[in-house]
Amino acid sequence: MTDEPLDLDRRRGMSEQKAVDLRRALAEAENHARELRERQAALEQHLLANAAASWPEAAAKARYLLNLYAASLSDQDTRHRELIAAVLADFTRLTGDS
Image (cartoon, rainbow, N blue to C red):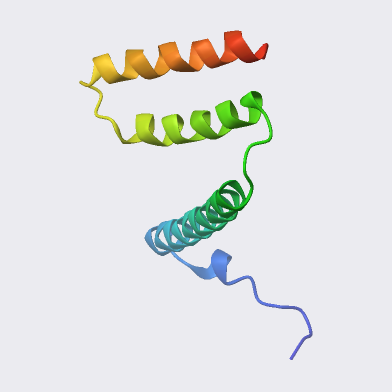
């Protein structure tokens, strides 16, 4: 018996290795999605707990909400997408962001 760990990946056939790689990739994607949801929840809690102290801060909150809404729109909803783009451009122009 040795203290060296066995490399089981080398002992698997090609189809088994592909299945393992797929499971690993899926687990990693699920972890990233969970972490993203946790960060998003923390951000939203922060946005709820703290009132905007200026118009630029209020615009940043509105940008966040508009981007969430835009992500839920269908590709065919070009009118709402154009309206969101125009409002975001207004925020950029009025707040002096580049």
